[in-house]
Picture 1 (cartoon, helix red, strand yellow):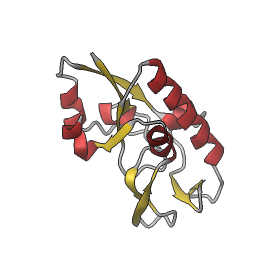
Picture 2 (cartoon, one colour):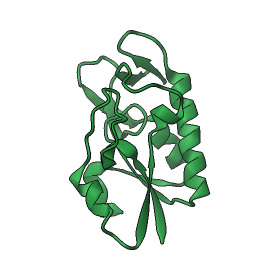
Picture 3 (cartoon, one colour):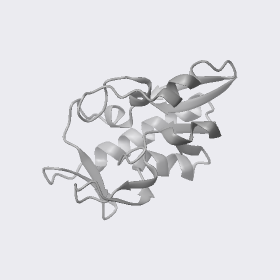
Picture 4 (cartoon, rainbow, N blue to C red):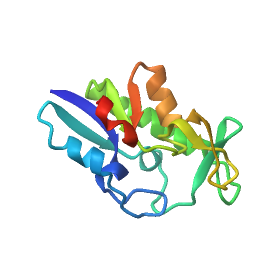
Length: 144
């Protein structure tokens, strides 16, 4: 059995910044597989943020919410907690929410709150990758 870390919001948990559910059909289909077990995480909640919360984006190496408040410390703490869980379960893969300042892999919003994408990774995705964990977004569940 292989354990795979997964953004809890992709499984339908109401932990997104707006408190809404947004399960992803491709990720939910992974629940049917007998060779893997999904370990749900929400790095923002693990970092101490409430739900709902102000939307946030990465900019200049940090994370800022729409009100202009720096929230980097919450994201860094949540990333470390997600890494602890990945290590506990010996996860070698993670399926994370695309474009998120925490979980985004490859493309994230640019910090202008105009829904403009830029190259980069969210704080958690970056930390997991640095520790050898393969990170993919929900559109890439075929790689799991």
